[in-house]
Length: 261
Image 1 (spheres, rainbow, N blue to C red):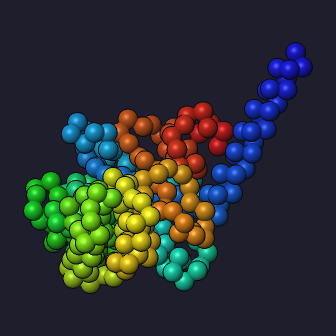
Image 2 (image 1 turned 180 degrees about the vertical axis):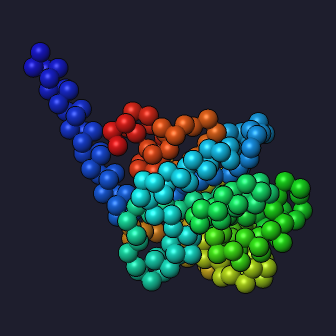
């Protein structure tokens, strides 16, 4: 009997330590959410990287209701570059690839609720495919003050498979195109497929980027020491509003852990 009591007590202690650790990380750190597609009808081609617009609106409302601080990419960059403290309970919403449904569904909701979002675009596909954003839409969103546009490369290629010259083209050309079209200095890069290594990271910073974003999950300590790309929580189709608070606090979806918070 004493053995089982000891095991139970140990589990309680582990949960308590985990709670305190993640509470501290959230208070002093940065949660980054990763989205792709937003729409009013699920598209099976998205492979699960799809959030219904009504669910997205509920998530935005929860951020406000629960006292989180929706932070813009520009503010995150400023805090990092100028070594500033980040506001408590900061959450950055990011979208990968640059799909047209970001403009049709995510942008109006973000604008309505004054919640900033960032979109990492594949510049070689902008205005080239019907499912992708146009430069006119990008300019409108950037000027709104609600959306920050940044780089996801030219053609969504795995940079690890490219030569230095090919990778630098993806990095520098995409940066240059966004800066030319929007007038904004691009300081952040998001890895296609989350694929990187030491060589690729070195090239990213050589290309003039100050921050890099990956797809590994978790909450980011602040100040970010740039030892690895920024972590992001994956917001996927089929997740409930029970899952979302846990994503915000831990960077992972876990219903058991979410109940602890």
